[in-house]
Image (cartoon, rainbow, N blue to C red; front, side):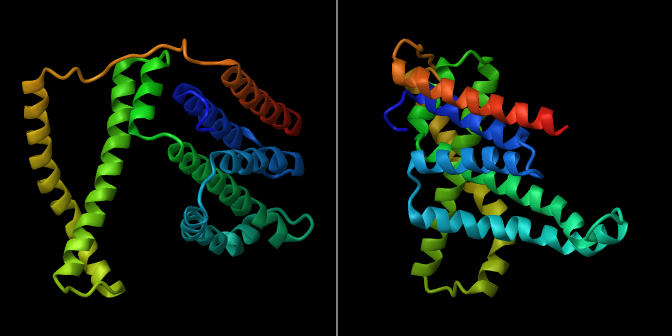
Length: 235
């Protein structure tokens, strides 16, 4: 995927994400097209094994509690067939869809650094305010992640314990630390940008897209169309 132009990577990632959303994951064809698109996209983006393991653990922590609702869903569900199996279809579909979307988003961001993401947003025909908002969300998320790692390193160097209990006590203080450090940094960056006459947003063109970019977008569109068709037939 890194051989493609940045706008193509972003568009393909959005199309695969939409495929995971529209595919009916309560039927075998829907599971095949939805999960197959997510697995194929992750494989093409080349996520490392450590990142895949971290995403698996995150998805389990996020969606595994849904299965705790199965006894109540079984009591309120229809009486046809096995009530436990029928009730488990709902949290299973939600878990599969959510996990696929998490992996697709992580894989898309893995092949787009901040410069590529900026170039991709600048070349797409979307309103400028939305492009700026999306760019700021990505930039602030990366900055908060790096800031958290630096704070954790500073605490570890100062000899503070970082076991689970200490981390739980440290979490409520993170918003205040983030806010103070980022506000000061934002003031310094804004002043430097004004002094240098920096233009906040520049637009590029789609002229750099090649034939392989068109084939990639076409394949993603066909996958999305297959997901929509399966959902329409399932309904």
